[in-house]
Length: 128
Image (cartoon, rainbow, N blue to C red; front, side, top):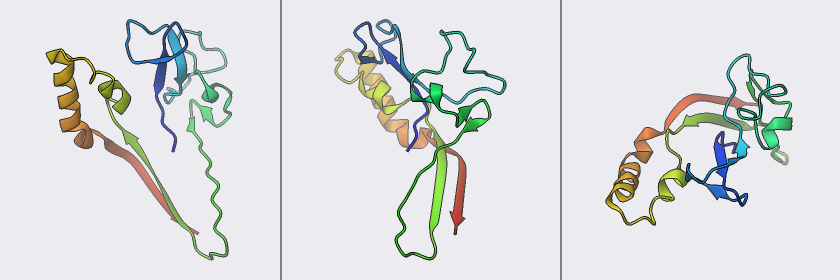
């Protein structure tokens, strides 16, 4: 599974979702706009992590290859879906330990809407 997302880091190099604690990215492989050149991008908007050196990750899209052993099967069926979710699980649940009403309300909103807010943008199936 490939997850296209930014993951922020704090000054100690640890994952954070706190915007006031963030000093950079550990990973940023959000899909690139047409014409974006990751090789010449300013460091403030650069692709970060494995995608930076991945030749299959460009402004034309992203290629992900999976290798599956099929044994002696003569027919194989596979599929892929591209999902979008406006707020990720990590972001919402990192608010849960805070006992103030506002973060607790946000977690409740997330829990109530998470299953409905994620949508399939594209789907493909193939049989061979």
